[in-house]
Length: 424
Image 1 (cartoon, helix red, strand yellow):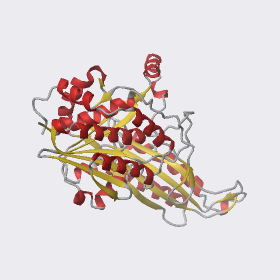
Image 2: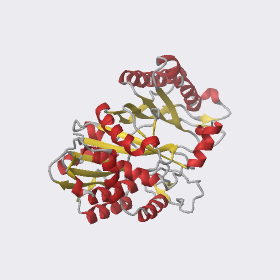
Image 3: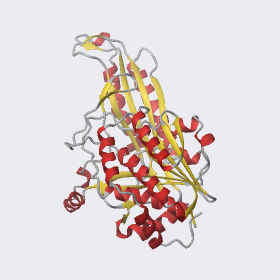
């Protein structure tokens, strides 16, 4: 499927000749950053993508699995390449101090008002795919095949890819031969990293309710305190990784939310926990999930809880395991194009639902990463051994510098597609 006889110089000439003026896309990025939309609420973001794809002459399918968008550009015989960008933001108050920082307060799916922020860089993903689509459309005389651009909702809740597939995505568009995506990360701006095998973890999330017996805070002996039970559970859950997972295997168990009671002198009758699990190996995943349920039920029983706890498995998404052959094809073109800016990186403990767009139709897939940290800031942090102190994805201070981040992302997504589309 890789184009034979395609040199780095050939691709560099195509990209340089066909890359659109990025100044309007820089303005678009600022607009998207200041106007974030939460998962399954990406109405205005998707409308911008739809208008752009239609202007370029794509066949456009809308409202797939919510506000999902798929644009198809047919350009003769050849491979079908799918490029994906996610659109949703996070319920987080931005603290970057940027002139285009988000100040939006939105309602979540439950109607609660929340601040919203693009703290994971999906605004750069949308902008770079839109610009990349324009570049590839301008370069049609150089390639044949079918290009698909997917703008996916609800990645942050790991539900958007599944929703698009369930809503008939592949009944509307051709099945791809390869599926590609990219993600901005805490790396030096202008750099790109690609690796085969493990990239991102599988994710599982649980909502847990502990049932106690409430009463007066001065008489705990007449109550069954769910807060004490919950505290014991949270502490005990941390022994799973240290005592039940083999050293060298990766697993994370985190409690992201604990909610119970309202005032100091009332012991509540229930407590809610929200748990997150990250693993790579399927066997480790099964062991961790089984242990979570065992510990929760055991601690409730030991405390004499009035009824069995409710443990609800609310979401699950597989690990992102990049296809080796596809990575090697990309590494060849990326290496000749980005040269010293193609850098090594380690697998991350974050998770994605992107791989479902490929595995559903048996296609190979790759996600690569690119940097957004100001070069001077990065170099100083490296010199001080303080890279871990730089704002990372999901931080209220996360703010990729616009350039050369955007240009790198546009070039990378176009280069990825051109690696597999047939050259004329």
